[in-house]
Image 1 (cartoon, helix red, strand yellow):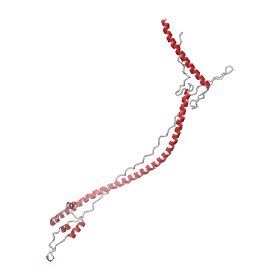
Image 2 (spheres, helix red, strand yellow):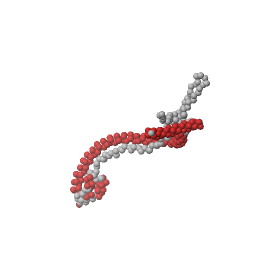
Image 3 (spheres, helix red, strand yellow):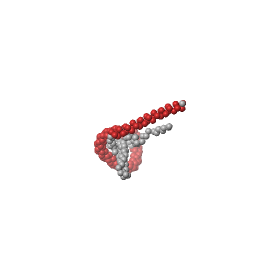
Length: 294
């Protein structure tokens, strides 16, 4: 006689949705209770942290208002300075063009006057034996008015018999005859305007990210029970009613001692069946070779 052993049935004894094994006594409920305790602790810490963050946000908004006002002021002043620089630069460009024309005319006049002074100075220097320094020629071959007046004061002449002037060899008299500088005024140009420097903005205030609340654990589903009622009459009994289960409820289902006893009996029955089945398989395995040997 052959026996066929089927696997131990686990359907309806284990929860189909991990992580909680709600069908195995208090195992699943114990995990859920531990997770709920951890969640409540994390939620309390989050509330304290969030209150602190709200206070930080209040001061952050005040700092941000002041920062924006400062940035607006500095930016507005910089734009005004840039506009003023643009206008001034345009005026300077026109002044530079006029200066180039004026300096060209000045250089021409200066060269003509300097050449005339040079020719006159060479004649006087040879006549009086004067040695003129290089700086004299570099500045236009002429004396300043103060230098001329000083040489005129120092010049001494010697008068001859009966009032006849016999001339003088005094070099100061020769210096007195040198030309006085009379150049036209040299054109000038003011310094080129420079663009304004960009303002240095203060560091913007910062605010840490808003702390997020912890996620509450999902309660294990309640065990589904079927209640069948029969009537004493012929066929007018009410159909079996199955109460619906709110799987989103966060409350832990209450368990009675009868539920614990029933689960314990089921688990014990499963263990006994598994042990007997395993023992029988061992017995059949050992008995077969003996029968074949007989």
